[in-house]
Image (cartoon, helix red, strand yellow):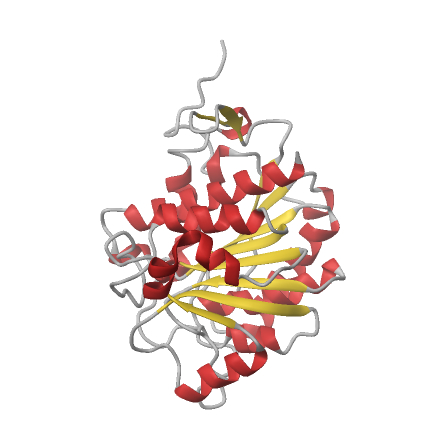
Length: 311
């Protein structure tokens, strides 16, 4: 009898896609890697629980290698022969940045060596630091596109330089990271004035959520730096708090799902998506589960754009 593979059955991998326990044997176009840590957070923790919950939510929409029919494009998407694999989680040690970051970076490097695109499930935004380091494996300059309410360009908090407010500053110091654009900025807590000055001096394109609404998708895309390779780092609090309440720093006035998907589609039309992460999902603050579903569906759209590029 043929297996129906319903969402409530089977192993809870991302989108019900196959699991790979040995990245040295990975054969995939896209590889998912979880990073269940949130020790970069200074206030409301809980993002360490996100990878499992996002995977669970994704099983409601993904159907494994059978993919799904997209009536908008009249196409079966994310189906074989396009290969999506879940590599489980990086080995983390709570409170130990060096151990955790080393394993995340090595996981990203292994995925790239095997010819796949790394898709990382955070975790707080500090995990984008080792993801960025791992992109050195590509051997070419990468443009970083950040969707976020916050600038994340803080140099340090006391002696700490690897918290969830530091990833963009740390990536700006990496020789293989090139232009940046940051979309959805707004509200309190978006770094100090000197941090914004440093970001602008670097050349980063800063677009507030209000400005993104006024410009429209086409206007925002016109401001995105032209590049061959793009790394998307998606902080869930970039979305409006009405659709993303399960975050550590919810703010009104943010981005919306169709808007972000259209921007991702536009970026995919400009250059290759070579990596992506989604961070700061904190399921404990959202009993309804809409935030983990938003995360899962956003990533499935990213997968679809990578599939389009690999056709």
